[in-house]
Length: 433
Image (cartoon, rainbow, N blue to C red):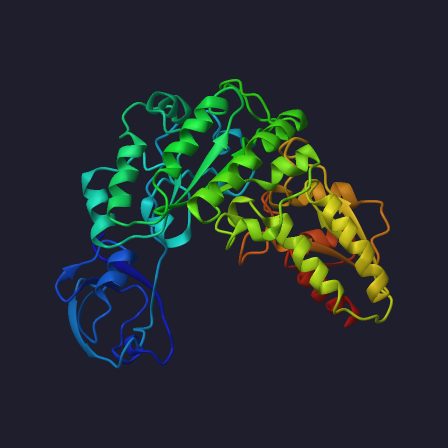
C-alpha cells in the first residue's frame, strides 16, 4: 500500500481540523512521495505544506496547511513493518528461544530505519547503494551497528552468510558523511576474541569520532540451543581474564581519543566478581541499553537516594530480580530497610525458561517468578522491575500478566522502575495501601 497509514489523530490538532481520520493514508507532502515515517519527518518541517491524503474509499484529497513554526500536525502513524533479517548468526538469541513465548519475540528484524528511529542494533548486511545514499542524504544519525568482527571472512562466518558488503567499507563511507555510529561486538570465545577482537577495536577506533562508542558484550546461550554451531560460554575465569586485559585498553583508548570509547558489558564484571570502574568512565552512558553501565549507575544513584530517605510506617515487601544484579540490589535493600524502617527482601529468580546460564532480569519469565515465590512469606507486596515486562502491555515474556501473577501469588504486585528511586517509590505506594 502506498503512503503511511494513520493510526490516530490527536484531538485539537491541525489534522483533526482538516477532518483527517484514522484509516486514511498520507501519500505525499509537497509532492514528495512518502515511504515511511522517516520521509514524513524529513519533509514535514516547512511551515507551508500540501498533504495528499488517500481515503479508504479510494478518494484522494489535497490539504493545504499554513502553520506557525513547528506546530505539530497531530498525525500518529501505524508502526512500520520492519525488514526481516536474512542472517544465520551463530549466536542468534532468537534461534535459541523455546516455544510458547509472545509471537513478536520470534521476529528477527534487520532494518536501518529502526536503528535510526529506536536505537535497534543492525548488521547492515542487507544494505545496498540506495539505502546508503538515503542514510547520507537524510542524515540518519546516529545508527547502531552490530559489527562483531571487522575481518570480512570471520564476519561472514559469524553472520552465516556471504553476500554482504565489507562492514568497514560501509562504515568509512558513513563516517565520511559524518554519520555517528554506536557499535557492538557479541563476544564468542575462540571466534572473535583475542587478536580478532584487537583488530576490530583498532579498526573501529580508527573511525572515531564518527564511531562514537564500541560495546563488547558476552554471548548469551540458552538451554534450547539445538542444531546450532557449538559455542563456548563466557565463564567466570574467562570474564576475569577478559577484564584484566581489556579494561586497561579501554582506559588507554579514552586517553588517546579524548573520550570514553570502548565499553565492557556489566556481565563481565559480575561473572568475574570484580569491581566496576567509576561511573565517570562511562561518559554519557551511550551503551546503557546494551547492559553497559547499568550497575555503576544503580550504585551511584543508590548512594544518593540513601542520603535522602526517611523512616515511615513499617511494611514488608519482596523485591524480585534476576541473578546477575542480586548482590548489588541486596546490599542496597539492606541499607534502605534500615533507613526507611521497612523490611525489603530480595529474591533472585532462577531462569528455568532459558536455562540457569541466563541471569539478567529482563529475561525472567512470569511462571519462573511464580515457582520461585510460591510457599514464601511475601509480605505486603511483591515488587517487579519494569524491565521484566513488555512496555505498555504489562505481560512477561511467557505472556503471563501482572494480574495473573497477583492471583497466583495471592498478594499485591507493584511494578517499579528498576532503579533505587523506583524501589523507594514502590515502598511509598505500599504504604499508601
